[in-house]
Image (cartoon, rainbow, N blue to C red):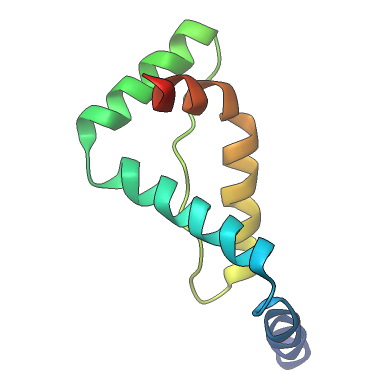
Length: 92
């Protein structure tokens, strides 16, 4: 079962590897993750924006890993849930 799932992920990866829009999305998610990972001050400011909006704080997640599809899905979910606060912070 795991082998077929791995093959399916690899086939999907092969198809999407050369798609510019997917590459841009992955790069955006990775850059947002790294922007907040290495700077605790930026992370704290982002959390304060979430509090001002009355939402639970969500920090961007890492894209990639051994099971990269679930990581990508979680990273997209975090971006969409925290979009307002992230945009407010980046506009400052």
